[in-house]
Length: 255
Length: 275
Image (cartoon, rainbow over all chains, first blue to last red; front, side, top):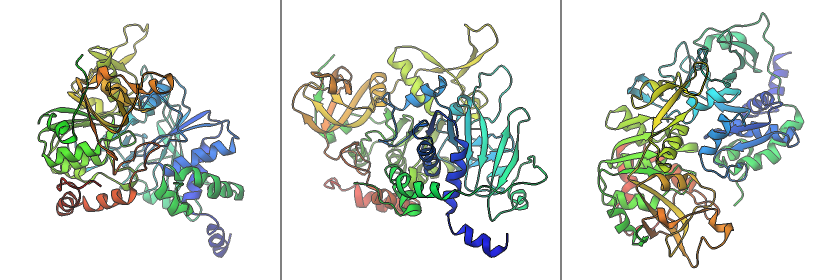
């Protein structure tokens, strides 16, 4: 494709919309997806997956009033996950390493930290129990994608004999999508987003991963998904993420 | 069980002694900001905080104002407004004793207390450095499994006080919380519960099932104070939304010591300020 055509095509959707589409595809066939705190792009992806499934996919967005069914307080999400009632969840990380360990606590020699992140939230638990955990972090640099995390908030893999129905399924960033192989305990590069190359990904990644001879480009969001996103999903999202909905979709939260 | 006392906000805050172990609700659930402001004005000292299971501006303000000796939490964050600057700063400069936990562990340890149990087992967590840094948590083999099945045990957590805001209390001290049932668990688990409310409910909250299902019985409620808009600048479900502009302003100012002091002066050190 000539360079000018790439530019013209890229202008049809925003970076956030591409990421939402990538995450929504990873939710295909999931009965119930839950979305944690401070996650507007995963939240939008879950709401999009629900719309595309014609309601077959249930969505629980933490911090939402309208898109959160729980009536037993903050613990219900965790109890639900331990029972196997949640099929997919999203986690991020201040650092992510090649074994899919994630660090949400900080950098330095714990507890003497040089940089403090907010904290582990429910990651140490949900990563172990939810079958399809999608790692999502927009920033893809050697600062984030490290050979070994400083602090393991939640481990990517576990020894045999540890009760672990859950774990990492994929990693999505501003540059690419990786799949995770739990047997081999490593990522493989699945697709690279338009405008970037496999070489860009290698340059920005501090851990080893597998890569096929030719890496396909990430499929952009189809026009009907964009229409859904900019209309109904943007309105649904504005309740929980007013700042994001306004910045990306120009939508104001209802009073 | 003594009757619930109705007192004013300043007295409610005064009855929480320095050094007390306080359970705080998360940002999505009835944050007692007016009570927090009263604690700041006093000012309270050497508080030990348990975030159930996370906190935001409430813990950040108390930490920044020097009211806090120790904190146990799964996270402290201002959500969409970014990191909690005073918490982050205090951890990095070593002035705060912090204990990292994870959300379900805090919920489960409080459930142990509400059942009068010494501990609670919990799935997950194995292989996390949180566990590696918690000498108070133990790993045993599930005594009911035929094969080896390691599982974590958490000691019960019994806070001195559960503090939160709610829409209504009736004159018997029953407090309506709707679906925010982490507050129910906090009230069951803590030795005492101190609650601020938007209004006194003229009637009996336990009389009809529609309201009774979302009501904490007065058995668990020691004292109530009126505090209209008492969650501001956080929101209260169905009544008012968080004051996003104010929170953004806080997030910006609290990045520096001077900015944080300016915020306190503008908002909380003047007892007449009502928000």
